[in-house]
Each structure stands twice: as C-alpha cells, then as structure tokens.
Length: 187
Image (cartoon, rainbow, N blue to C red; front, side):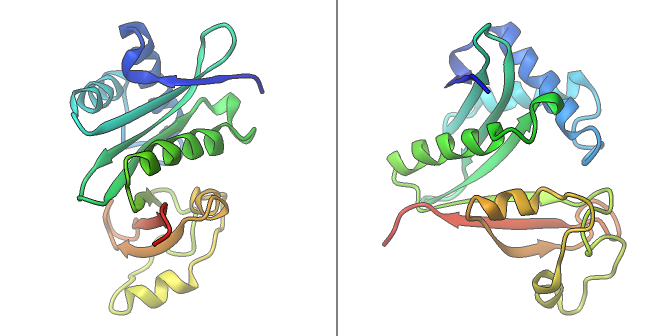
C-alpha cells in the first residue's frame, strides 16, 4: 500500500472532515457509541485540533485521499495518551495502522516522552472479559484475558504494548476499557 504520513493539523478543513468520517466508520462496529454520527466525529477532531499538546498524523494515498489517522495528547509530564487510531475499514489489515502508530511513537520519542498509553474498549463482546463481573480481582481477570473476536488489544500487543489494567464497566456492565502502555525510551 502506497501512502505518505503527514501532519493532520496542517491539512485543510475538508481533510479534517474526512478524518471525522473515517473515525465514525472505523469505530462503528466495535465502539458504536463512541462517535455515532459524523457531527460527533467532527467535534472530536475539532477538540483535538484545539489541543496545544497534541500530535495528529494522517496517512494519505498518492491521490491525497486519507486512509487513516492517529493522535496523541499530553496527559502527564512523561506519558501521552494515544487517542484515537482510525483507519478506513477498506484499508485495515494492511499495515497502515501499525505504520501510523510507529510514526507517532517516533514523534513522541523526539519530545522525550517515556510512556505512551491507550484505552481500548470492549463494548461488543470481543474479549473474554465481556459480559462479566470483573470484581473483586480485576488484575487476575486482566491476566487471564483472551481474544474471542478480533479485539484490537492483540494489534497493540504486536506493537509492543502491554495490558496495564482494566476499568470494569466503563461502558456499562460487562463492557470494560482495557488499558495498555508501552515504554518509548530506555532508561
């Protein structure tokens, strides 16, 4: 797949809307409540563009069509949150998401960021955690978690991220947020 990675902040308003459309399409099956409409996606993109400490990268095909994008926001002095990663459904499973994450990590390393973290929700029953009461031993549940229907946590594991915790019932009973992180700089 041929593409270039560019700074989304430097793109046009039309490109920002395209990013919103990709966001809605990419999450429609796995997290349908996240951004149910394009207007919700537009608001998310606008909110991210307004953040001072935010990196937004987009992958464009040779014709300038956006294939996907990724963002990160400063949340702590030395840790940034990867949020979001969205790839057009037709462009998924071709290495584009991994390339976007790696490009983002390079920019974070250049800023001296030690850790990047993310939350990857299970709203539709894609992991063994779904539909269950994860209390009282949440960490044991996290350690025993496995994929049952192509949940994104395995994608992130392949990129070196590890599960660092869970937020049980984050999206309603039995719909946890899986917290993952990766150290970017060796100490």
